[in-house]
View 1: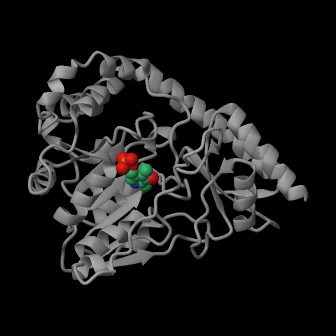
View 2: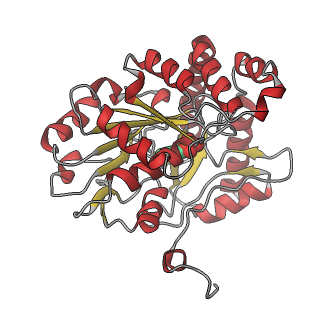
Amino acid sequence: MSRFWSPIVHDLDPYVPGEQPKVANLVKLNTNESPYGPSPRVLAAIQSYEGDRLRLYPDPDASELKQVIADYHAVKPEQVFVGNGSDEVLAHIFHGLFQQSAPILFPDISYSFYPVYCGLYRIDYECIPLDINLAINTADYARENGGIIFPNPNAPTGHLLALNEIETLLQRNTDSVVVVDEAYIDFGGQTAINLVDSYPNLLVTQTLSKSRSLAGLRIGFAVGHVDLIEALIRVKDSFNSYPLDSLAIVAGVASFEDDAYFKQTCKQVVRSREAVIVGLRELGFEVVPSAANFVLASHKEKDAALLTSGLRSKGVIVRHFKQDRIAQYLRITIGMEQENQRLLAVLSDLIQN
Ligand SMILES: *Cc1c(COP(=O)(O)O)cnc(C)c1O
């Protein structure tokens, strides 16, 4: 603390990212990264980028990338906003579309960055409890609000909401912006992007960090009505006109051009997820059904914090949230086959002892 801090900084309660360990050879299942490398076409695009061009600022609009995303999702490029990871896109959404008179709504168990943005931008919020199955009940959001946001599938539960439930919510909620954070949609859900032309208050965000194996490059985007996108552009151009660097732009374009690799790696993650769920249940875990690249699991007898530290001492890192209702759960990212087997083997040892 320092007397030079602004009152806002003084009151901040910042997001705590999962550990990025400095030592090698750990089985890293804690931050929902892809276990597979990016598409070879992405690597080739970065390698063939002419180094001298790094003298120049990147395209402030990243128009090539917007075009590729627009084509992929059958929308107009003017309906696409890109940012330095979807975290930055979300920050601009909170800043530009959620600063309203009524509190915004999000689930009590959800992406822990949402309340952090509220603190940064001084936005009132109310947390809506998940139901007893740790699922979102959209009927609970039928109340006055300054905006609604939830991940679909939800994080850290992995629970997927069907598109028709989202549509019901949109039909009821027409006076504020509804944001569907689809960070994990490629692992088994149906995107709400197809609804943006019917609902001018719907904004859908996605990221290249998880299903496209590019967490290190920081690329995220939002799709919605041009008026919503314009708000985000106004915030961006009042903050940083060049959120995507030149390499991120060419790599992002190349990623969308290799659909076969994308589909194949997503499919492998889904296959591994189902095997991990079976393995965990055999060990006595209760597992929330997941449509994401992670699972949330609770052991009937063993304490989650002890399991987490036991795993850590054997070189396996998972995430444990010290939060009400999920304090007895582990959030486990789906890794490569051998990593998942190592996880289950270490858990089996820990449970027997
Ligand atoms: C990972 C994640 C993000 C952020 O992803 P970026 O790497 O910033 O693109 C956003 N929302 C949820 C729910 C996430 O899990």
